[in-house]
Image 1 (cartoon, rainbow, N blue to C red):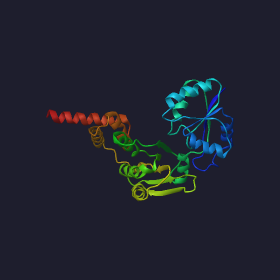
Image 2: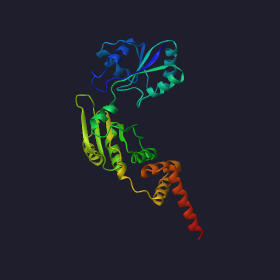
Image 3: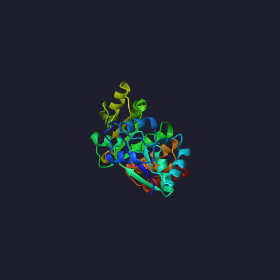
Image 4: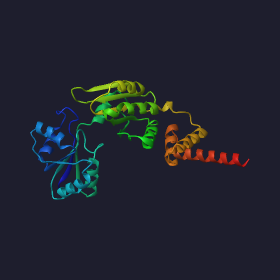
Length: 284
């Protein structure tokens, strides 16, 4: 049966590819690549001559049915991203979902991953972590996401572009405080660097020293002991402030619940009691 192979490719050093990945790339009927120019360099290095086609966010609407048709005809397709595992923060996710929905076969071929590479080298806890990909660019969605992350106890992993790094670090410092962070740049390449310090220090450093290359951030989660003591009245007030700032009531309760380590049901109860108190005060 024909399969879609999800082939991990090197994130920098071309030697970081598995024998199995090379075999699949050689034997596939077609390679679908996020950037064919980038992938051609890898294929040329290993003398692989499998036909290439592009598959990126601007053509996935047309290319997805085309690739599904080839799979139904019995053709094996290898999907690759610019670097690392396809489907993580790239349009490969859409193709995987479509192939599964069509009842066809998906075969992962594991290998390099920038997120996990940065995590294990960060020096931060790696037993429990959460991958956030890229933060929303700006506005309400970005503020809401940062507020959620501020209450996250697990180690955080994010991706960022070099020209947005200083602004993102400053936003993270305001939302998360002086947490430890590892800023990993050009992983596995000649100029690989991993900068370690606090978020405010990182924001200051990278404002003065703009980096090049793709960036992976690894940030310490909030220690459970640093949570504020739970006060139902303060919790209800925090919900009201978030709602006044434009957040939906349900999302506001969820974020306050995380902040205090309480259930949403408890926060809902606190909000009802606060509303009841306001009603009683108004009737006096």
